[in-house]
Length: 417
Image (cartoon, rainbow, N blue to C red; front, side, top):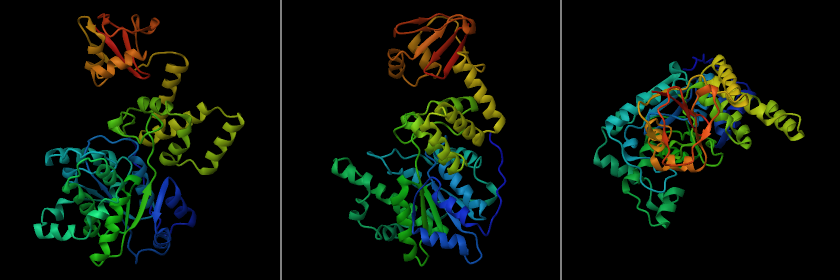
């Protein structure tokens, strides 16, 4: 999956390059003038060390993660060094950012498994040759109790409670564990250990990034510059993309599936997705918006362009074109997909059981909800017949060879009796 992208070093970036880096899909740059000066004048002849700290809490990434990865790639194109830090210690604690309850800690084995999967997906976008991979355990395995207590002494409880998520939990009477207070301190110390010049993250990481900036001068270092990127909303068009909300598109999603999900996004999300996940220029995006407002350009055609560009980013141009053609056949011409997976079924089964067993839904309750909402139908004669909607939870699906079951907009199975 994905094509290797040559990263061209540009030690002397143009003003346009820097403006693009510091504004495209960027939420905030702490001390922007300082970072701009570093990019223009250089870092004493050395490439900037641009840090991204990641907690491998899940083996699968969403295209929301790719917004940060693409920003790292832009730094690489200017000749700078990316430091991806595997949070093999903080993943065991669990990042409290944006959470209203404590996260379940992971075992070291889970962390290692997830980290390998994470890096495989990370290097689909970021150039491996200009990346240094590090682990927190390089320094925290050597930490003593005295080191830990000393580190805790650099922040107060009152300062920690300034964090929005901690504040909400405290006011709501939800427990906050002392180990969670350690998370931003450990992440901040990572910047000290790595001598980071710049740290990048989503807007939900701002507090953690600032802790690193505050700790570095204590250890005799120049405070790192901080750049946060905008988080993209998920398929619902409202909430941040995330696996727990089931509103995500996986980086590893097949081209057809990725294209179809992108086409399901609300129209108002298109500008954000274009900016976050493509290189289409602002002038062209402005032109799209103007023509749509005038009624001379169909939003559907703009969304197709968006979906095609994004799929090409994660696959290639041919895969994107084929995905678009498959989408048009399936939805515009009401044809079934050509790549429907087989589902072995020798005897009739309850529809709820089939939906869960075939992984078309994640639970019996979700399957019943989908049926209630009219989202389940089947094609008794396969491609040659018309669909029949299933509205009864107790419906028994016949074991008809070649029949097709559809759940939602894009989930299909073909029965193999």
